[in-house]
Image (cartoon, rainbow, N blue to C red; front, side):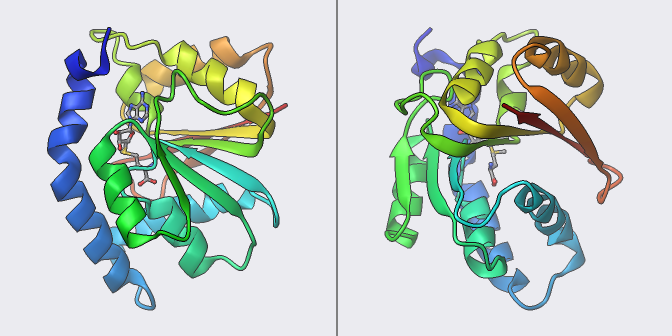
Length: 200
Ligand SMILES: C[S@@+](CC[C@H](N)C(=O)[O-])C[C@H]1O[C@@H](n2cnc3c(N)ncnc32)[C@H](O)[C@@H]1O
């Protein structure tokens, strides 16, 4: 299936402007003030950072507007080699313009251009959800295979849309591939997230 014909690809193409504006203005307000409506993202990214060590390299799969990069840059003292990838060109073009100092690339989670074990950590933060809808099966297992293939130390998956439906499927699929640890992120009760950390 070509990405142009995928429902979620079209969805994110259309979502791009809104997401980009929202993310950028919220992050700007956020620096120094931590307002409640964006606290959730801050806290989730802080949890993610607990599993990223100083001097690690991180491949951020489905980076959208680069929110995780901004968090690392503005709120972390860790030195991290970062690359953000997304299959929607608009996101990558926008990230490149705003942050030319970082690495950005158009790439599909299910067919990464990276070499085996070339990144310490591979992160899928709210990306896998969009491939796991059983009504629109979009090769989510391939995205997990690719993350496991290119990760040297660990993969981090964060999901939120349908945890009851998706978590058992991810657990089953990862069972013999990595050592799995899970953390429930309930900072925003209406939208709880689950973080699955797979150690290689
Ligand atoms: C909710 S956003 C992710 C948020 C982002 N990780 C952050 O930290 O702000 C979902 C992103 O996943 C991207 N995406 C969905 N399926 C993808 C795929 N197969 N390959 C690459 N990116 C994908 C979408 O284009 C969108 O930008």
